[in-house]
Amino acid sequence: MIFHGGCVVLLLAVITFVFAADTEVDMNGTYVKVLGQSGKIRVWKGQNSSVDPNAVQIEFDEIKEKDSSGNEVGKSGNSKHSFNTFASQSFTFSSLVDVKYQNVSAKMFNFTANLPTVSSVLSTSVYIFKEDGNITVANETTYIKAGNVKFNTEIKGWNFCGSTGVNCTQGQKVEQGVYIDFVIVIKGKGSAYKARKGVSDGDEYDLGGGAGVILSKKVKYDDKDWTNMSNGFPTMTTTGGKQIFTFRFDKFNSSALYDPIVTVSGSVDGNTYGNGGFELSASSLFMFTLIILFCLLF
Image (cartoon, rainbow, N blue to C red; front, side, top):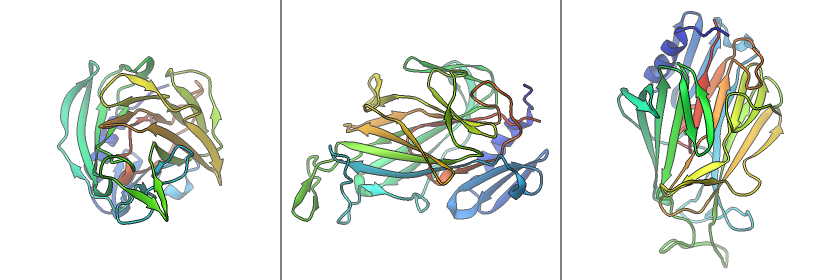
């Protein structure tokens, strides 16, 4: 498999133009378009994106606080504890700098968003790797290629229902929040299936058309050791051609950090696929950790 250096240039172009409205960039036949306030980014091969059969859309869909029975809490009143969309969120961005991530050279920038109804700050660091190497989360190791991108996000200060000074009710019922469920929706070329171990120690799924997702089962709470996610999570279901991934996070005191991976063009099962398109809802990238491995073949 041969990777073109233009992939790195393309990624930098995405970062440069992601904040502009309706901006389209052509990088050696690979097109990048930012779709205004929605924050969606589309990457495809050839001039007409609508004919790319391998286009993938990724949207960080929702985040909901749940009680011990899995029921949503904090829906009533002014202080909402659930978010069905993040398109209206405002972001603050830093400049691009050179860094080392676990001894692997990378470019990095940060962006943050506030969720005032739960007194939370969502802080994301984005890394564009300049060289090959390995990165490790707990005991899960992933091989990184130059040009890969990692989104490492932390949610801080979430005020759960039932915490001191946080009163949530539904009618006469007093609500207690013990989980946060976070949902990512991915629409790929085909239905997702479990792939064999390849580039990572995490659970690997193939989405068809050269796209895949690698799911870690580890979460870091309150800057302590990595621990296992709640029993049975993450989960994956398919509805209407979309792959729906749900991650459950236990109640934490100060922060939670998560680390999934998405690959585009170059299957996680070891086979080689064609050039894939990629569409990402940047307006919701701040939700927990996401690594996106861009491996566009030329």
